[in-house]
Image 1: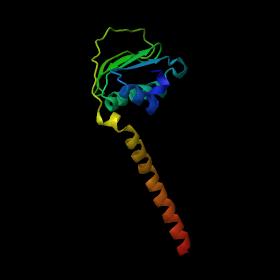
Image 2: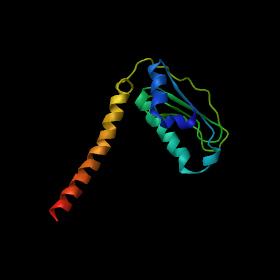
Image 3: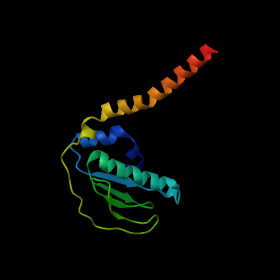
Image 4: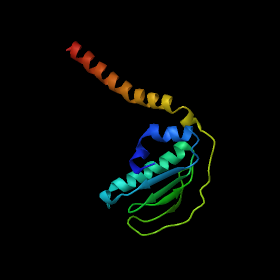
Length: 132
């Protein structure tokens, strides 16, 4: 996938559910040089490794290249803007974990987990106004 797609559920979920065995992220982070954006994208890649149950390989021309195992552990990582490379042996996985099997349900539960407190807050404000 391309770097920004690491943040989009549908693209990655579809690839895993269609038989994807590895997550490969290709990026050029020159625009975000020495900012927190590069670290944020890297951490999202680690989370995706755990979520998908797949190893993640990041190929960055100017950012951080890395090999992350399916538990989110960093097996190898370059420094930002350092011309480094490494030949790695990534493990391929065929199993589809709970998060991938139920990604739509999890998305809706997460959405309602956000909306319920907001709705309760609005109800509380309405009740307080009516009491005054």
